[in-house]
Every structure is written in C-alpha cells, then in structure tokens.
Image (cartoon, rainbow, N blue to C red):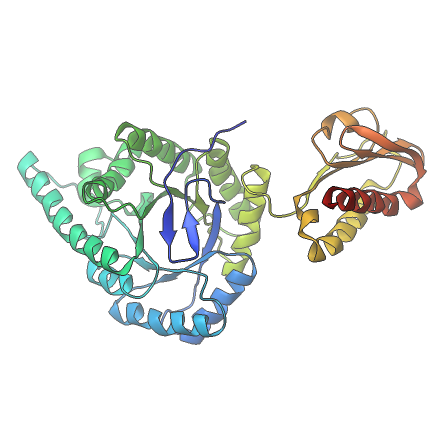
Length: 396
C-alpha cells in the first residue's frame, strides 16, 4: 500500500485546506477575460457545480487584479463564499501584490516573477553577479510575503518547464535540476521567513519531464527539511482523449508514488470538463473515492450473458441510488463474465455479479457467494436488493 508523502497543511481561505491528510483537492481555471465579471462568475459556478474546490483566474494586469473583487463579491452573493479563488500572475510582481489583498491565493511563476521574460539567450554571470540577482529576487519576494501574511493569503510557487528564465537556463540548462532549482530559490526564502502557506507545482507538457522533475523536487525538499504540499498537473495536455491520457499518465504516476495534494487537469475544453477527469484519475489511483467503482472483465467466449448491456443497467440503477444516498458512491462492484477469473479478480469488491452458466448469474457479497444460478432477467434487480439490504443492516 502506497504511503502518502508527508506535507503540512496550507489553509486557502477559511474553508479549504490543502496538504496533510486532507483529501486531494480538485481545481480548474476560468478561460474568459477576467474583466468579464459575469462571464467569470458563470464559469466559476460551472466549475464548482462539477465538483471543483478552487477556481483560478488569469490576472494579466492591475485592472484584472482589481476586478477580482467584484467577482469574489458576486460569488459570495450567489452562495459560493466557501470556494476560494486563486489569481494567476505572470511578469508583474506588482499585480501579485494587488491580488493578494483580494483573493485567497496567488500563483506566481518563478520564471518571470522578477527575472525578465525568457528570450532563449545564453547569459554569462560571474558568481557575484548571480548572487546579486538572487538578492534582488529575495528582496522583492519578501515584500510580497509581507502582504500575503497581512491578508492571510496563501501562494503557489508554480514552475513551468516552458517558462524557465534565461538566468536559470544559462546556469543549469534545460534540465530537471534547473526546473527544481527555479522552485527552490523561492522556497528557501519562504522557509527562512517562516511563511508556511505555500503550495508548490512543477508542470511540463512532457509527462516524463514533469514526473522526473516532481520526484526530484520531493527529494530536494526532503534533504532541506521542507514538506510543502504539491499541486500536480500536465500543462498543455491537449483535448479529448489525448489530454485525458497524458494527464492520467503524468498525474497518476505521481499519485501512485503517494505524491500530490491538489490536482488540475489542463484540457483545451470548457473548464468544468476538467473536474470529472480529475475525479476519475484520483479514483483510479485510489487517492480519493468520489463515485461508485466498477470492476468488469472484457468478456470472452465463456461469457454467456449480455455483459455490456448488463453493465449499463447496473450503473444506471446504482447511479439513481447514489443521487439520494452517498453510501452507494463508496462501493466497488464487480461485474464478471464467468466463474474462471471472476471471483478472484473482484476479490476486493463489495459486491459481485458473475456469470454462472448460460442465462444464469451468481451474486457475491465480498468473497462470499450468497445467491447462485439466478435467472439473468432477475439478476440485476436482485443485486440492487442485496446491496440495499446490506447497507441498511450496516446502518442499524
């Protein structure tokens, strides 16, 4: 069993805590202009109603940062005050200062927070010149931390592989070591200043680079006695099946390592589409159970009933039950074509539906067969009755 990486808790406003033993949080980001108050509110609500627990908004300039206030106020008015907002800031540290006084979290990018935008030029620094650049970064970041401390604002230090600064690239190259050092420069300041409300992310569109860099960051933080929580994501993952598969590979690999405290699936689609994918990845990795899980075989010549149709009927029946009773969302149900592998492959399921002979089905509670050779036309209803009876007995 994978042990979850130890991290400390970071409070994002009064209602969301990321890290520690808290559930891995799901988040997404609006795509309309942050000056469009109503558009942002509508998108935020769609994200929230899909299950999102934090909403991020791009904040290009001071005008956009200041417009976060009416967005926050309108969401509060509509009953969504419990969902924190995060401002996404690039290129201008002054914008981050303004946003920190309005929303619950601010994301900054080490690649362009103080360093100028990347130009892909190789820069030569003496050690003294390099230290002078770090000193400049230190002073500006400390001013930001003071504002965040005053307003109770959390931050995300969000490194993107594609926006490493020329300074970092010139010293470390385009390597995971450079990606990690870009992050550690800021974390060391936060640690020294005793500012714990920091979430960290390293993202790349290349899943191998993303996974290797995050693992290296975890090792580096451990060496320096840091336990900041981690935000996972594959940036620019794409859309449709491609985006979902890349996200599942990158995020899922780290979740199976026990790494990750919040995730964002980046899809070139409507933002609310990202949340069900995030939930499915968490579920598949066993990191957060949010819906009924089904184990089903692909079927073969030994399957003597309509396996695809039966799966649909069971899912529809359980889905209706789950709308009214959240206990159904925690169940794992096996649907197996035959007795050869069925009972063994679904051994950790709560309930099982297994083909026994032509037109006959056996039902399982855990590993125990409780009803044998039921006519296929009765079996789905009998399974639902078995589940309902068992849950009611457990409740008593």
